[in-house]
Amino acid sequence: MAIDNISINTVIGAGSSISGDIRVSGRLRVDGDVDGNLETTSNIHVGEASRIHGNIIASSAVIEGVVIGDITAPKSVTLLSSSAVIGDVTTKRLQVEDDVVLHGHCISIKDDDAFNQSVQNYNDQRSIRSKVV
Image (cartoon, rainbow, N blue to C red; front, side):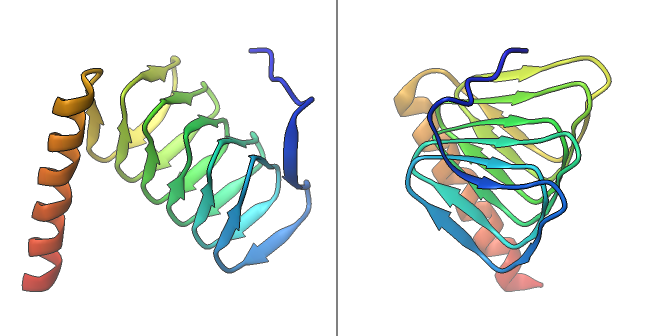
């Protein structure tokens, strides 16, 4: 898959290890390890050698590495063959290649209203369950 690296605003390079939440404006590429949540107003690309232990919020996401956490990307989520996601995926468009490991719930609805309602219902259920435990 060809990746457009021209307009990436922030890069967390290979060999980097970051502990803590990261919030950026613009495109984000992660080739290192992050123990914390990642949030961007644009797109995120998680490289093949990356290990993320936290939630991802972005407009769209391409995942090649390991994510232990939830991915919320309303525009699209692409899970490439080298990826493993242990968490929930919420998007309007999901593409999954062969040999992907996906362990969690998935909401993928194209219609805006149905998508928003489904996400709200799911978040409400999760909130209720977390308060009971």
